[in-house]
Image 1 (cartoon, rainbow, N blue to C red):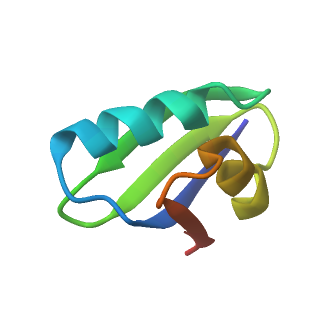
Image 2: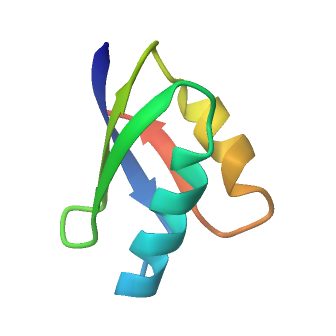
Length: 69
């Protein structure tokens, strides 16, 4: 199991955190996600390493973007 932290840009409210968490949770291998609006981060627990590109693909055409910390 891996634990990773990503910086997430584009979030402005609590609804944003819920949507980003939902989209990240849909990535194959992700077990848990904690998104924090104040720090603009997502802590991802997964069965395997997850890439920022995978997260950005999951975000689709939204304004959210992930970067490795």
